[in-house]
Amino acid sequence: MSENNKIGTYNFVAEPFHVDFTGRLTLGVLGNHLLNCAGFHATERGFGMAELNEENYTWVLSRLAIDMDEMPLQYEPFSIQTWVKDVHRFFTVRNFAILGKDGRKIGYARSVWAMISMQTRKPIDLLAINDGDIVNYACDEPCPIEKPSRIKVVATEPVASLTAKYSDIDINGHVNSIRYIEHILDLFLLEKYRTQRIRRFEMAYVAESYYGDTLSFFLDDDGNDVYGVEVKKNGDETVCRAKVIFE
Image (cartoon, one colour):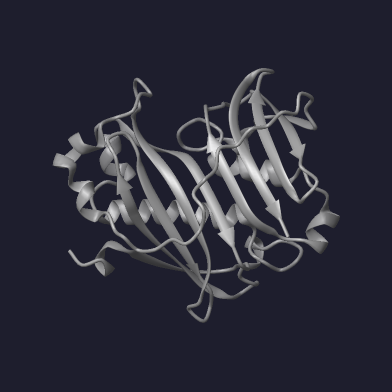
């Protein structure tokens, strides 16, 4: 299989209800598009959610890093390319490129996924699924951004808290991974978004949370437009950590 056939390309438009008050695509919508493209690409190659669910398996997102030079404007067409970079026994690396209306690459993303049993919630050996066929789709296409970093947050007092509600819950019955991103972005004042933009956003997912859980947000500010965020549920259990870099 050629390298080009290993890369999926999917087209989108920045709809009015997908942009923020600046007229540019929101990070949450971009995140949803990235995850959808991962699903499209996997399904087209025989290891999508529908096929896995028949075996009581599912994909879970472990890490995500998005690095953007710019965001598409309202009504602009854009596309997302995705490919599998590496396959290991218990996790796989999937990368993305975001292309603007003129086909120029305006951003990249890196992600790490695991396949788990829906019954035990434990990882599945990827090399044992379909005789390890997923390895045949690995591709060396460049992704010239830093890998997700190790995020540490030292804040001990929450800056915000909320209760997980209906709109937070996805088909798996837990808080959707992108909803965490949207809640984290809400920690910053609107004025900050008037004068700056997010250059890079990283997420590390640790545990699941569910309807009715209390989510508390802890924020570190290093004073250089780099912020660390930790989300805990019901007081003490870490759910995820994030790094947000503005410019």
